[in-house]
Image (cartoon, rainbow, N blue to C red; front, top):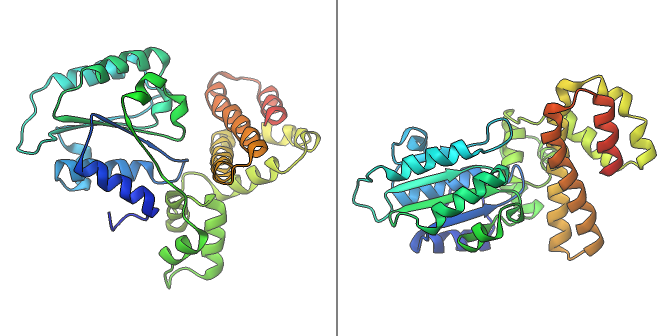
Length: 288
């Protein structure tokens, strides 16, 4: 795990899982926290293969959302995958990776539960999600759980310290990332899928009163193409704020950010079928 930047407690949990793997693992962490990379790292260690070969490995199945959902059809592909004969000498011969498991439809979750009830002994299922509570309790109860704990600003700035970055660039990337390792790496290397301007706009909107937000509706509605990135940026900030509130046991803040996060996630789904962008942004900004 030396190549991954992890909180010591998170690292300890992962090492314990590697030594004593169970049928299913849920990795929870906000967007940009490095869940995907961590899940793949665990998979490569269990199978004893290079993580770069996981994408094409025949004994690894990657399940990802299509059109913002994981449908019952994907569960059928999992069932077919698990019927195949597994080869090799390792105790764990096959890995199923389910990314963004919170996007499993209810029908898909119920079908997935049946898989967990009688899993193959040589297979480990790894799910990633920003919030495990969005997954059926019966799936949670049959899975081990690891939460990616936040790191201090000092640790993150030291980790990314490099002559090619100025102190100002590192500070800016840290704040734009919401304190998430994967997000900060993406910002620094320029591969960030969420435009920095959208993160700054999201922070601005979340700091406004409802009246002030509503004055922005007309302008936001003109840029439908940027709506996806803006919603992703709002989600990053809300999730980061929620984690901080939970860590500091601030009940009022927990409720505030949990509500905003729920509204944002729902808006990402609603956006696909919403023709009236003024109405869309009005509803979003009132309820954040």
